[in-house]
View 1: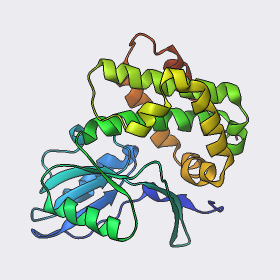
View 2 (view 1 turned 135 degrees about the vertical axis):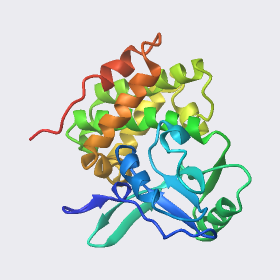
View 3 (view 1 turned 135 degrees about the horizontal axis):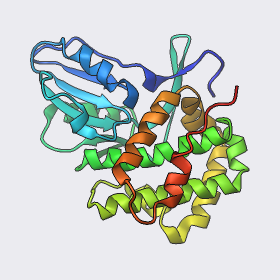
View 4 (view 1 turned 60 degrees about the horizontal axis):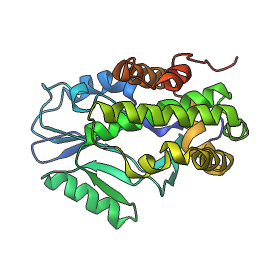
Length: 259
């Protein structure tokens, strides 16, 4: 659980000085990509730059002027940074996603994670994966804001949970209609329209568990700018696609944290 004074780990980035033979792993929220890229732009050599975090625009959000090779990924953990110590839990349903393709550096990263017991999934279309994931994260985060970022309160709010699940399904359908690939298989299955009652019960159970706080509410509580950025990106991408009224109803209202 995140204690007072703790902050979500995705609000910072970790970087090693790059040379022609090293790589850098960067953790960045979608609202911080520009600042992160400014810093990375000072690196020399030809490193592999692995960007971890929410990024609905994918490679298009990364300046082509950066030295080295850009790769994308997303961590399969949730947690927070408190007094210099990272507290995290693994998310069994979400392996760490790494862009597929020929890359000795990413192979080494995947091997290192696997050797430590972290599940890894190599994704052929990481750009699409991140866009679908943005629909999911924006919907869950906005639902949590409607409930004061209280996971237990959201678990008991069947109306908001149902709206959230409808929004996710509609966003996924709109992207599929645009021929976007990369939809995570587990989310694709859970958010089929016919399984919505099950999805609502599943998320109620998840939000009521410790995972609801650590993996969702704790980060959302400190990530209002990122939530807004993701919501704007999702709405801009789906536009006025038919059958997205619940997605617009959820994301267009932009609830704020109560004072």
